[in-house]
Image 1 (cartoon, rainbow, N blue to C red):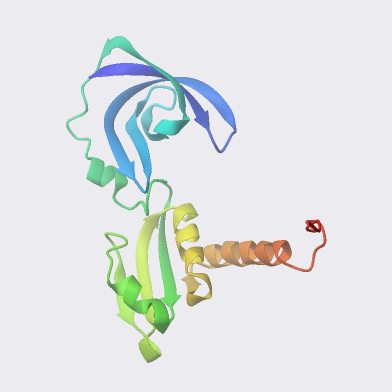
Image 2: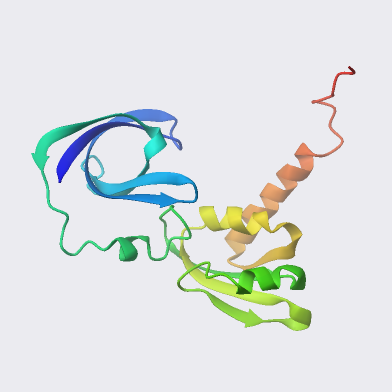
Length: 177
């Protein structure tokens, strides 16, 4: 129950910042440990990847986790670690992966509806679309975003960039051995 001072590398800004944090919980998710705690710099509860903490030392400042803080509620609509604006998503999945989608609980708000020929429609309200975008793309052509249009466009642009990378470009010619 003591605050810590950390130097944290922020991936999005490619910058290190010094912060005081009241650590509420250490959480293991998808192969990475995270620290969830109140960040004094941002004056809100934030998530920090432990492997991006470059320095940490305990201070003498004592804190109490607020009684109304609930980890489950804090992470509630997240599709993983990221936080963001609540967004309603609707995704079509092909028959050959529908069984995989049905057998797991991917999100607390998910609703699955059977479609034609064994396909299905997956709906959920998620916190932001960054993480769900990568999940959708991991299913390749077996998943199609129906809503929102903005997420559909993001994935279309990413698919075009992948096509350009794997196109007939000669920029990465292999040298003969």
